[in-house]
Image 1 (cartoon, rainbow, N blue to C red):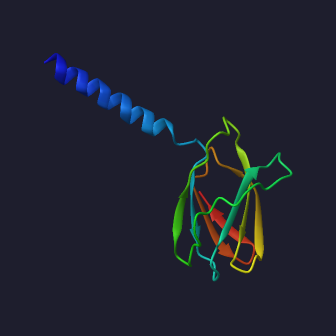
Image 2 (tube, helix red, strand yellow):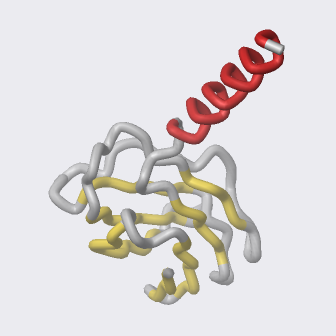
Length: 114
């Protein structure tokens, strides 16, 4: 009986550790534009630097990807830049990623979010 309880406790601890790896600013990016999205830059709105591209592969129209944001503590406001395969970009400012869980790029400088 003690072994079963011990295994249950270890299982709960492992599950808790996996859940805690997700940052509170994680979101899903959806491409509903007419172009592929090949580059994604996300930075705190307070930063003047975009940093590195964080998109592991291009997103075709209709594709989505879960974006993991780690190391930002309780930072809330973030700017997002997407670029197509030719480097043409669109920028969106001040998403509160503590409350926004989905950003959909519509193209022509428009995005929706919730």
